[in-house]
Length: 124
Image 1 (cartoon, helix red, strand yellow):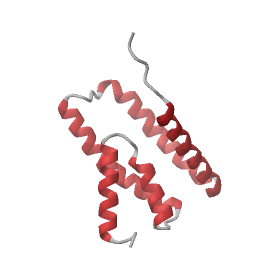
Image 2: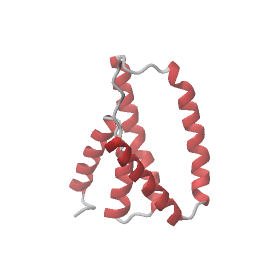
Image 3: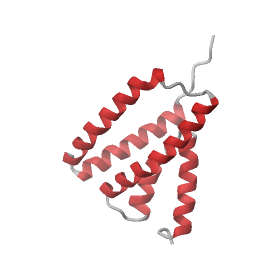
Image 4: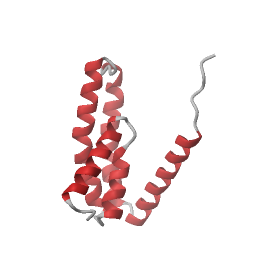
């Protein structure tokens, strides 16, 4: 049932919605692919990247058209993100899978705790 087309469309729609909000649907996609569908971590990461590209492009394009996104100040961050992605893809291939899973789990826990406990400072 979890691997059926209707389930995949539902999960893709929900995660696309979350990605559009900037919530990080990719992390949830990896969990669904590995835990629910039993895919290997390597395959799940590749699928996550393919999922992320059109979702990020369409959300960014819509925000840019509304005037919420200015590219010039973001170019250094975009370049650094691309370089870091390339380097850590290479590094990730040399890390043991069990350690990678533990690091990813710790990242999810820390992110969840931050979201639960962090409050923006009110302007004074």
